[in-house]
Length: 212
Image 1 (cartoon, rainbow, N blue to C red):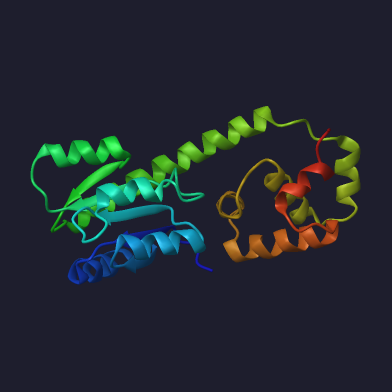
Image 2: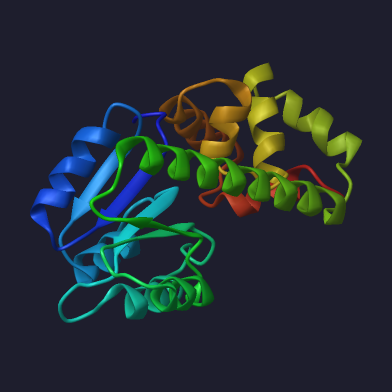
């Protein structure tokens, strides 16, 4: 499992897809699909990307319609979406932003501009997630010292740190970035923690750490 940020690009123009792939793959984990329908199928069954690049002018389902459908998919409402378009005029840009896009890049895109826009919105999204985590932590019930001591008898020091981050609402990806460990390592440790507590869902871990 790569530790790179994940980007999904949706564009019916094969040339644009190939060019984007060449530009982005050295920096990100990239998925390329040629229709909104294919993109939505991917979003419904795979691990969610950190950002979506999407063309507006596509057959059957265009970008304007697709953005609304994507935001209805579980876990996709907050994913930043940047529109890629060759359409002229501010009306299209305004409409896209009103529908929930975070930015616009004109095609044919300039490599440096595309990369700067992507990095800008990935960084902003990450900060938003961190603020959300902090709020969750404030709203969460206090850790129970007795439960924490019992948990320490079952877990390694590293597993204990990971478990508490899970209880605090962090995803495996966020824990990976926070601790400087690979995503796969965190995923394996999270699975081991669940096995030690005899649980299957990470949400169940909360009862072993916090006051009810």
